[in-house]
Image (cartoon, rainbow, N blue to C red; front, side):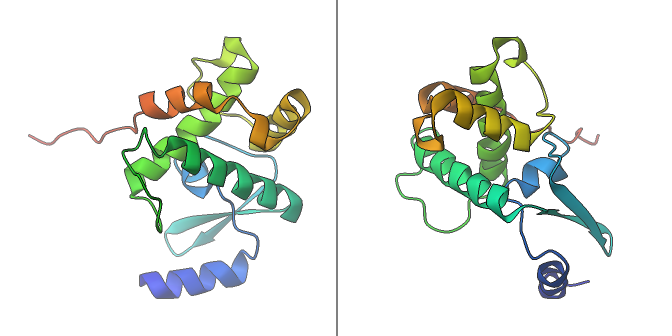
Length: 151
């Protein structure tokens, strides 16, 4: 299946996109509101809640803005390269989880993005009030898994 056909089918089957689809696709973050759909050999991740999807898009935009210096990007124009987007999505959610609960600061996964966002808003009073200085440290330190080299 070519990429344009995949995207067309993906939009038809998945009307509410998940802002953290890459993190969920990599099995680093999970969400009780996610909807997974198999299209050809690929998996699309959507959201069952329009309200949560809007909150996630807002959080991701704030993570992108706050991570610009760390990612060496003075201006954010268009989509980030895959590795940098993974750093923002996975590192951002793991950093937020660690900021809320020090016992989970070294965790490798986020069990529930929905619960994490609700907890963050309740604790900090809004997504714009999150401790981005602390969160971005985890973004900077996050490394995607490398494929083993072939000899």
